[in-house]
Length: 169
Image 1 (cartoon, rainbow, N blue to C red):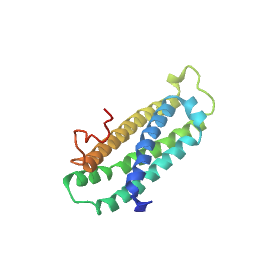
Image 2 (image 1 turned 135 degrees about the vertical axis):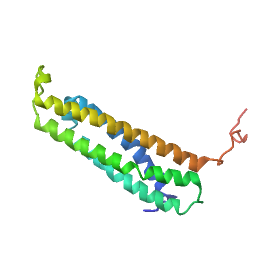
Image 3 (image 1 turned 60 degrees about the vertical axis):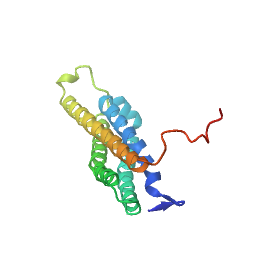
């Protein structure tokens, strides 16, 4: 996919990634920490993570097409390099979302207060720590990619002073 209604597809698809990655990261962390939330969400958590995982290569491929149709400069190259690194983070979000969903489904009954001595507690702690690390990494990566893309698109592309057209003064 290269164009959508005359616009580069990357410009449109990037919005899915910018919304889905932080949303999936937040849902994953909440579900890993709070199994009741995971039970309520059910299959929604891994499905949103799957949508996130699918949106990343679609956006990256559209971005590669766009990269070939804009002037070559260091900012565009940096954005493309950073964009190539998001897929492993999205994959991690998906794998952990499936694992949390599966684990919570296996342990259908709410845990008793003496959870510190149960073997499942260690799994939950590990899932929570991994979820926090992967979620933070994914969100920071999306921020860095978006920042570099904005700089590539808008560097010297606007005036810092108003043109007067919008002034009603």
